[in-house]
Every structure is written in structure tokens, then in C-alpha cells.
Image (cartoon, rainbow, N blue to C red; front, side, top):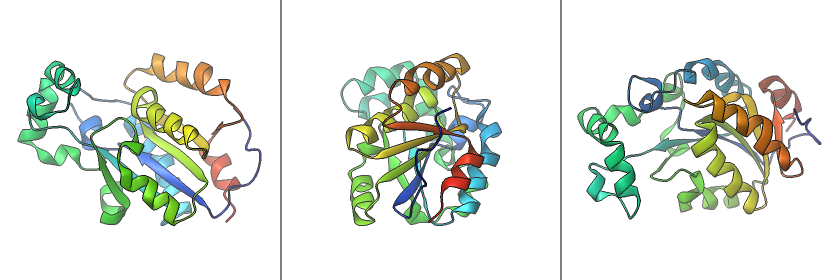
Length: 201
């Protein structure tokens, strides 16, 4: 684990990625370990109320309404579009986040990265944010895409290692053990306890 090089100040925000029923329940994208990280994500929310932006991954009504190569992607995952069509609530956040989150704290994204939504960058700029704290699913897809987009934009990035997970634990572990540690100057790894202790605004 890379120790936090300096305290986290007031210009930080927590990006909580895709903690949704779509991944928590018995769908083609089921992530069994999502439930395991809910307590740690909740600890961060409780310690720093009002400092979180939630992402929800959205899916098209049908593969043919998706853009470009996403069409073939959703043809592969046709069960997901069909399930979401039958139960639109699958896009909702899991509890307790569905109850805790206010509407303005939720951004819907059709892309892996949260930065696929222009409004995110606008919100961060309006608040003079320089540090992004990342939790959620899946480590090797939407979390990773968001992390590298954040790095490219110059943000200090902290990935909370016990508050991210994936449906592929092997891929999750490779990202945490091999990939992210390659750029310690730009990406820090911290436990929930270390994060909360170091967030001193």
C-alpha cells in the first residue's frame, strides 16, 4: 500500500462508482463481493457527509440504440438490456446509498469512465477540486477508466483499496497489485481507515 504523502484537504471529493442493483443482484453483471465493500463506502459517507458524487452506469433500451461499437457490446450482453427494460430500478443505487444520496449527487453515465459525463468536470471545477477519492465497482473496468481519466486531467487520485471490487477477483487483484502501483506519484492506495484519518479538512 502506498501511504498518503500528505493530508487530504477541503478540495477533495469522493467518487462512488456504480454501486447499483444492476451489479448487486442476480444479473449477468452480478458482482458477488459488492456487498462486502458497502460497509467501508458507508463509513466514508458518514465521515464526510456531502462530499460524495455517485455514478450510475446506464444501459440502452436495446443494443441498436447504443452508439458505435457499444451496439456489438450490448448484443453480447442482451440479457442486461432486457433485464433493465423489465425492471428500470436495476439502475438504482443499492441501500443505504439510494436513501442517503440526494438527486444532485448522482450522475448517470453511459460510459465506463465518470468523465464521459461533461457535468462531472464542471462540478469539480466549480468546487476547485484537486483530489479525487475513488470507490466502487468494477475495479478493472469503470473504476480503472475513471482513475486514468482523472490522472490525465491532473487530479491527485486516491483509490480506497478495501472499498473497490470486481466480478473478476483475479483481474481486481492484478489492477491493485500490479497496475496502479506503477504510478505512485499519481495514484495512491489507502485503506478506508487511513483515508478517513488523513482527510482532515
